[in-house]
Amino acid sequence: MDIGGTCDDRFSAVRDAFEANFAETSSPQDAGASVAMTLNGEFVVDLWGGTVDTDAGRDAPWEQDTIINVWSTTKTVSALACLMLADQGELDLYAPVAKVWPEFAAQGKGNVLVRHVMSHTAGLSGWEQPMVIDDLYDWEKATSLLAAQATWWEPGTASGYHAITQGYLVGELVRRVTGQTIGRFVAEQITGPLGADFHIGTPAEHDARVGHVIPPSMPLAVEGVDTNSIALRTLLNPMLDASASATVPWRRAEIPAAGGHGNARSVAQIHTPMACGGEANGVRLLSASGIEPVFDEQCNGQDHVLPLVVRHGIGFGLPSPEVPISPNPRSCFWGGWGGSLAIIDLDARMSFSYVMNRMGDGTVGDARGAALLMAAYGVLATT
Image (cartoon, rainbow, N blue to C red; front, top):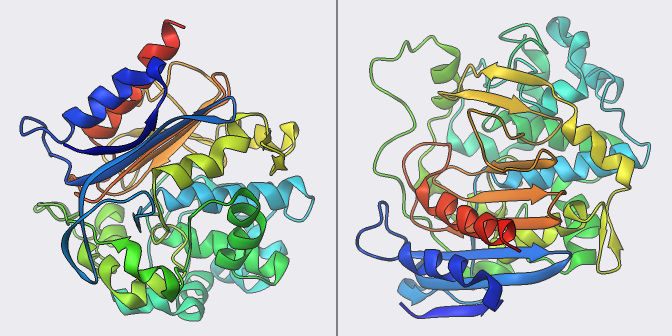
């Protein structure tokens, strides 16, 4: 396999693990992918390889500037936007959502707080009214329906993964506070200053280098599960088809929980300031105190939607015995459907990301990203 990019000699184990992900013995085997890692603000790993399908044709090489839909890894960027507004005093994470979005108070939702939305504990993991994928391109419809409906459980008492709805809830908070869409805010306040190639609402000029995902072999839904359950009401409305991400309407739409386009380099780059205490390479996104809400535990227990115990801070998942994503306590993370991954480790001053086109089954990652992360931590443990 022809691997492009750079890798510090100290982290050759990460390169070896990346190459192994393309081997016939790995399951699922990577087709095209990228992995990146910064340490103390500097890239120590920036690798890519394999092939990618594009609008122009099949089996083109994955290039340095290839970008692809990263699914729920987008949530980490959307969360960062809200943390920045909170740090600037523009958004109160502990106040009711209705304080900035008055219509949201309908159906008794005056007790839903911003921190609930950011930790998947708001009780709005899905839409009550029937939705189709095209409805995700209609911001007003997606947000107004959520504002008008009642919660599915008592807010703050448990998590239920807001797989798609979280992006509209968070994005509308950003819009109400700033007057900008979340895609525009991210472009002007995060990716622009950093020079990071990541987009929520991808402009047409990037189409030629956008790769298409290879859908998973299994659907999100599981046969035999009660169709009235919170899990299936969340995952089946609308029923997501991964191939929709290869269409122009999906690409143009701002879908802040699942529609971001980037690569491992840009995801790692976005989170590098946070990993370094809020500032890196002359760009400050957060104050040191502005990062602390991430580690304010909001839930720790069985999720209503995901088939596992989850521990959430405000905006990010946190390490736990059930999800031992990092050996360091001041770490946070999230990943995307099919396997993409973002880790921010403040103890190690590390930002790590893995992005690929061949999606694995399930929503909670797979061995490919885990192998790369374990290799990275293995090096850090010995240096």
